[in-house]
Image (cartoon, rainbow, N blue to C red; front, side, top):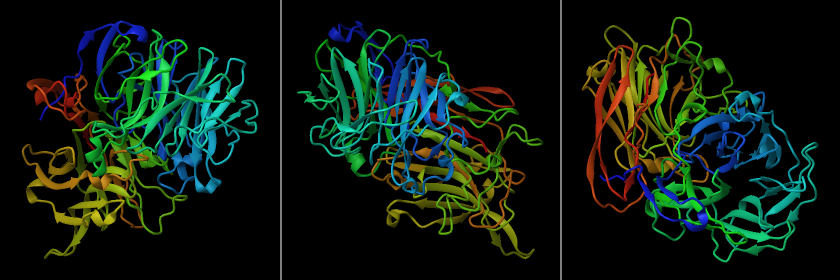
Length: 630
């Protein structure tokens, strides 16, 4: 297997891009499910770029990331972080693919504005919603939901602050719609038509810019699948008429065999050196893997350089895995919470700590006490209380009155280990189950659980733990039937260690072992990632844990099931991460890396792997270790 060297430096003139320093980088810049990016560069905040991505039904929602070099990112805050701030995030949408759609993030006169659309049949259609803050690094500073008027059945609002003080909201439609917004009242004017686009389906995701006496309108077209693109037009008046760019689309990989597909839904910004850049969503795998439904991470955020001469049209570089442009100086010192995106992620569950803010629930939990960190008598643990329903739900499940005990983080790497220790003895009734899940939504997930079943023996009936392998697919005829198999005797002990790890680009594998005996690991199940894909239009791959009674009337709590030790994702001293970014192998060499893993007993230094590098195939990051001990 061959991989691409992560960072190298070259220098060449770049003309109208501004800076002469041309630095190579790899996409995606925000890996894992981070779709529909929108970014605002804010000089007043220490020349920091802030980007938000879609969150749909997950909570916390509307994450805002911060970077000073466009490549290394930290979570700054979640705009939706309190149920009291936005009660609908708990039970306001019956649809599992609805919720908070694409957002726009902008900064004006000391205030950040995040405008989005809440999509739910219960509200009679899409509704615009705005959140504001003076401090993007403080969750609690984000305002409660502000509900401006929504001009019709439209989504993907943009908010544009014009030179004359007016505020314009543009949104989806054929043609794209626009209206003036009064921020003091939330009222909008009578909407007017902007631009039809170039004829592609689903004209949406508009963004308005003003440059050199022109209004520019950037939109997404073609749908968010293989025909996706971003196109642009301009006018000397916000009311039109609009002239399409002669080189449209601005950016797209449709009709190609490139590894990065579905490129579109873009946004443009300038950095501190006044160089222009664009971000867009993209799905890795090339058209063949996409058509075979193998794209486990979903839509991710990619970066591309843009040349935009005075009075002219913007010209974007084509999105590839390995690119170069006039990046700002590298900066690993970034304000925010948790690790850099895609880097080490160590969670010790210490007393006084909280659930990591980059972990997400599928809807906000009904009872926060179901997830308790380091409770008295169980310090350094994550304690979970099981729900009646499992990840698939059942016919009597009611989203307005009950939840599902589960918590996840995004899958950010092509290759990873997600390892969980599950203490035995939690089961008190038939069906009590704790496990790990490769999850997309309630209709698409693959789980490995430890479930308690009744057995008959000479000593009488008793409960025994078994492995349960279960899959749910959007096309459920392709999902294998659930399997309940005995846990091998040699694995039984204090705790069972379960692990999810990709075997290749198309298949993941479940493993089980004794948490106390090195070398006891056994392969349990190999499954096709196509089980986890649909049309790629909403969420992406999540990795997490769950606890359920599988329909039982009583929950079992943390006295019977408890997380132990710490959760961490990759050693903190590793910069490179294993990602596939293209298909053409070239030269190969070996790279050996050391990782320092800290345990409660000692610090041990170990060789974690050897990876092969190539100049143009698969990229960049060493084998990510998602090790969560529960």
